[in-house]
Amino acid sequence: MRALISVYDKTGVVDLARGLVDRGWEIVSSGGTARALTEAGIPVTEVEDLTGSPEMLDGRVKTLHPAVHGGILADRSKPEHMERLAELGIGAIDMVVGNLYPFGTDPSVEMIDIGGPTMVRAAAKNHDSVAVVVDPARYPEVLALLDESGGIPLAVRRRLAREAFAHTAAYDAAIVAWLDDLSGEGDLPESLHPSLEKAEDLRYGENPHQVGARYRDIHSRSWWDRSVQHGGRRLSYLNVFDTEAAWQLVNSMGPDPTVAVIKHANPCGVAADTDITEAYRAAHSCDPVSAFGGIVAVNRVVPLSLAEALAPVFTEVIIA
Image (cartoon, rainbow, N blue to C red; front, side, top):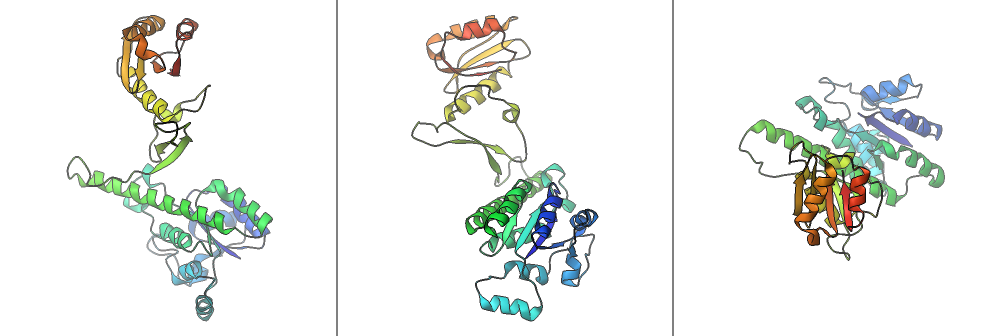
């Protein structure tokens, strides 16, 4: 069995490669990955030894070769594919481990990866025959499955292929956004290509019979990513919707101690005071009926006096 490993993020890659070698796999690699594995004492076949062609153009061309992509794309269920590989002296590649340059953190032409996405997409396309791994967090699972099943089951290969296509799609979306910024043609782009990942499952969607989840942009972080839920049930869609509105509102009111009470994204009351508890009382008094079951946002630490004032009123979320 043969694995082609070429990664930008080398987290855990030495342990993965060592685990594969210990299980009888051959490792093929290139560039910095090959050097890292060799320095760790792991036997590596260089890609250029496989292809007969050295890296060229400052590393722009490394894995773009029929000896690589033929080995990845050959359909193992078709005898004619395997016969053709044998005629050409090309060995099959059973696993591709690759992740791409972090384009969103340092956008430039040189950070546009060509060989990496091509290799990853080829393996994902041929997931009936090849396992593709783009997330270092999957490495322990891969080694465990090899021990348990002797290979990577099709259902897992399909899931890994989905992750691979999501990885390359997000990468391309970041490049499109960068080129939009460079073009300077108008204030708004002709199309948008957001790349979102699930942050959490919600208790339910807009209504209790609907499912829901909160997603985040993989290329940027918001205050949600720094938030910690200290208690209570999982948030619902409307909890998230109202919490976002409440937090944005309370943080737009200036530096004074401020409280906002929100229900269905509408302010029931907003108040500022020198004392945060008094600010809450004033905000709540604006519309105490609508405040029932609402969201309270506070731009200070909640003191005991405020907690005691909040306790008698049913409140879905308190954010501070």
